[in-house]
Amino acid sequence: MDDFADFVREALPGLLRYGHMLTGNPHDAADLVQTVLERIGARWQTIARKSGDPVAYARKAMVNAHVSRWRRSRRESLLAELPDAPAAAHDDPFENEPLWDALRGLPPRQRAVLVLRYYEELSETEIAAALGVSRGTVKSQTSKAMAHLRSRLGTSVGGGA
Image (cartoon, rainbow, N blue to C red; front, side):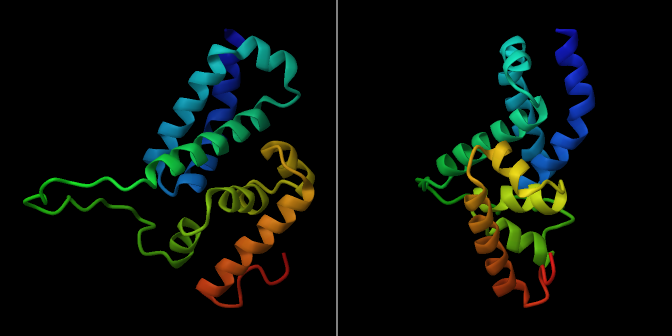
């Protein structure tokens, strides 16, 4: 288990940043990372032996867990009664940032591709390997995501990248 502890110690800051970019806030990111690390920790010996890059494995697991959580949360939940008082406002420093709002509007896979490409600076091949998709899928998801961002933010987004 020492190997897993070393892995967590080294990879945790990057996984938390990646989770924040996927989820849009640090609290959900911490929950996502914790969930994935629990799953990985339970099977660490197998993952370490079979996976060439445990960080890439963790990133892929984070994307899959985030997409699954996102799909579950999209279901409508009805209330029998309206609450007496509105929910307390949270202080999210990125709440009214146009880029964050636009990123939150992307489907999880497109957001994951953009995060890996522009935040983690991975190549298309590395992104494809991390997400378990083809390079063509990475290219198309990047193109769709950038088109969405351009339409929301203007034509200056990703001009030469």
